[in-house]
Amino acid sequence: MPDRTPKPSPFSLRLTPEERARLAKDAGDMPLGAYIKDRLFSGRGRSAPASDRKTLARLVSLLGQSNLAPSLRTIAQAAKTGALPVTPETENALLRACADIAAMKSLLMGALGIRES
Image (cartoon, rainbow, N blue to C red; front, side, top):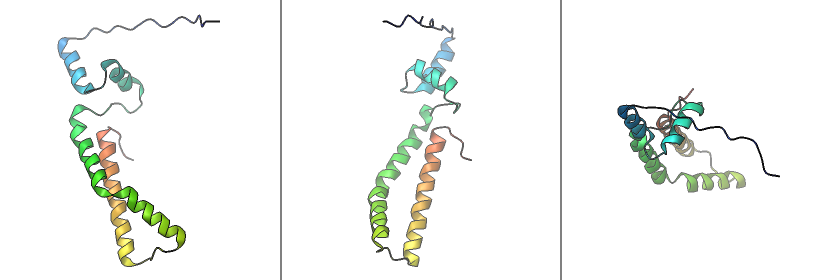
């Protein structure tokens, strides 16, 4: 049997040309309706504005240059087999990797408009 639940009626909002232009700029490539819903209901307060695309591009570049996934896989395999020597060099390398990951996380959180706690 078909669902007879009435659909909610559309909501209309009048904007000045300047307001609409600002929304379109802030939405970037995102459809305007989806952007407005995201701003209202996401709980984050805002989506990544177009100005943060450079930050996101920088993050993607850092991830590409980092070789993190293969390196972490190698470390995990060595740890599993007991072949990971715990030397000062190993510890320093792991600490540097953690710092790099923390920096990337911070860039991503900032680009997405999420405050770190």
